[in-house]
Image (cartoon, rainbow, N blue to C red; front, side, top):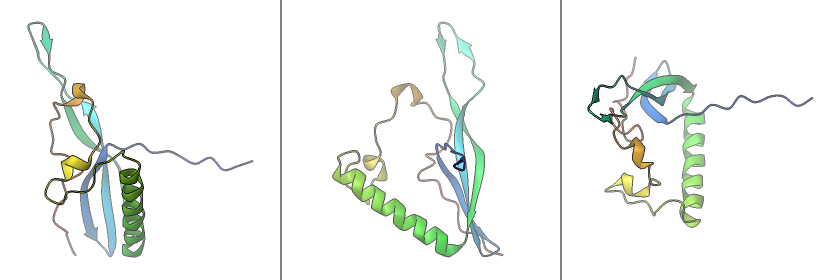
Amino acid sequence: MAEEIQTIYTDGVGKIHFYGNMIRLDLMDFVPAETEESGDEKKSELNAKIAYRLVMNPHAFLATYESFVNMIDKLTAAGVLSPVNNNNNAEQLPPENPTDANINTADPATKVEDVKTE
């Protein structure tokens, strides 16, 4: 019988820390925020919350980074992503669902905290 592999969904990385010789990535999920109704309109806001923390050594982090770069190249070649523009990373992201436009947090793809050391 084959092993079952757990699938983890994430909306992005919130923070990246370096502590104890390990790199820690906080994987974020967007969850509905408490909203107030005003007339016929109901605001649909989302808040980011940490769903998981991925911890790896620097060598594994570098290998993961290289895998991401290879996938970005393949997605760009397939037309799924626009070519990388170092001045504006948002241009390379696929279009978002317009109903999710009001997000109550910084873009998790660009929010990276300063590296913390012991």
